[in-house]
Image 1: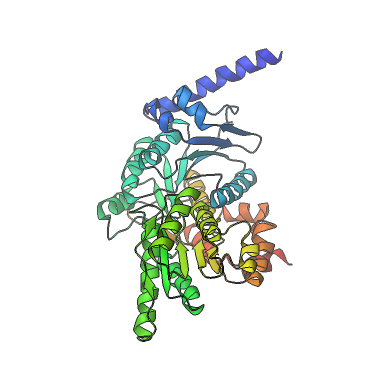
Image 2: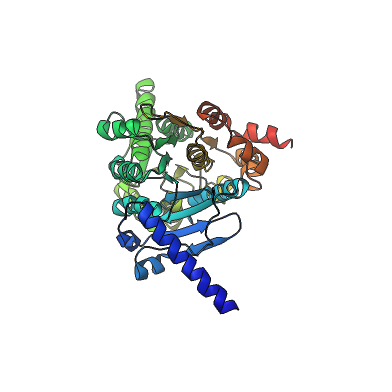
Length: 416
């Protein structure tokens, strides 16, 4: 009996995949050779297909039961669903999927351009009606938008926005698209300025900078803020000048962060601060390890973006001087926007670029982190009931909900 059920399940999965490929315009199966990790989550079951399986069998396919009529499936194209920030994003998205009774399928693309664009094709071929994406450069969005337009799949960005100034043609394609829903992102220049100010207030004047990917819009926004913060300080303090290094690029790995930190320390013996700009948390961990190996924890202050799981301890022992983060709910709002588009609640998006601004949370002491931990680590900031209520908001309501999230807001809603 078990074997018979297994054979039936395999046959249903094959039928599902074939239907999805036809419905998506016959997208090439070569997308499975990206080496990305694909995961699918439903309210009833959780299925994971590893990168190894993708390499061996072309495009990966989910083995979950066929969805009932009216079920919604949303794809998530993310750099990693397992690193510090990515796993937090997955946690809140899975909770939303369970609350709404929809399916979620993940593709980990490592911010490798060809894998980013292939992930959109892969998710369309898997039958997703909507996709949220954290791309690594604006150029990838040209392909992503076209693929979604061709297949009638809704698309929203998270942690990213297309630069109207630097990518005018792609911005126009997004604005003109009936299927591009919008972008959820943070005020990165402001974020950069605030982090630099934490270092300057601590007396640091020789600051080393670690980036992740050249051309990434989020990275460029933060870099703009770091530079602006230093320039503002120098204009106000002509006798107490600060210096910000050119960036060392680390990619999104711990090893990359470690090597970048070592290079900066070697090039500048007077280095008294480091900013690993981000990249999911792994580059920061590598940079911290390099500073610890060099015995310079007491002499080099580190600030960054993307909260580490042990941030409270690191703020207490001095291996971190401050951090911005708590923004793992950013993709939640992209998810809700796409969900509403699929449900037909958002119409007439073409001709308007929807921009959802999401606030960072800042901590610079163990006390700051303790408050954050209570409402964002020990528990998620939204209950199932609040997530269902959020799914009914119009675009303006969703923007207001995103802008209002803070430690104080989460504390007030929890009643604790």
